[in-house]
Image (cartoon, rainbow, N blue to C red; front, side, top):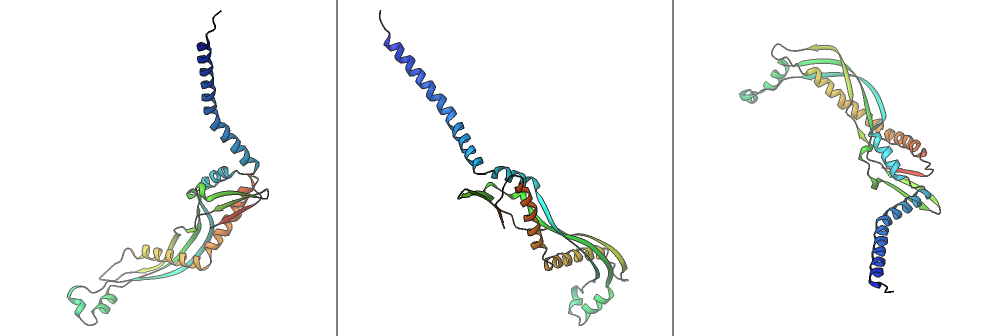
Length: 214
């Protein structure tokens, strides 16, 4: 009986090629699986933590309520040839002066935009069997103040009526409130509150050791 060695050789080569092909297909998946298993064993769930934080988006963590009386004055300036006349600016200013007094109520808020977090900002390290997650948080930002005003008095002049004096008073109050909130350390309050809130979040993932840095 004649044995077809060539046929058997071709079959063996084909089978080997198929095995190699299957191995090449499944090898990356196996490596990925083992890598993930190793990470889970070491408590590495930074991916889940990152996604959960990103979903929080703009996280407002501090708020200060303020109230203040604002005395707003506006007037026109001398123009054209009047500028060269001594005392003209003073006279024009007096003749066109507008005056408004308002009570401004508002809130200033501060927080962090967690949507800006990336994978580089959340790191897991294991030392002596202890897993520690370090999160680099975005800088604290102040949000535009929410200000409402109640007009106590408002007066114009015979020569000029400034219809924008109340909105100007409101804008002035917003600037004052922002400055006052900063003097009251609203940014430090926002950092502390953010760390406290996010520590609670990471605890849900079983993370016992976490460090937040700005």
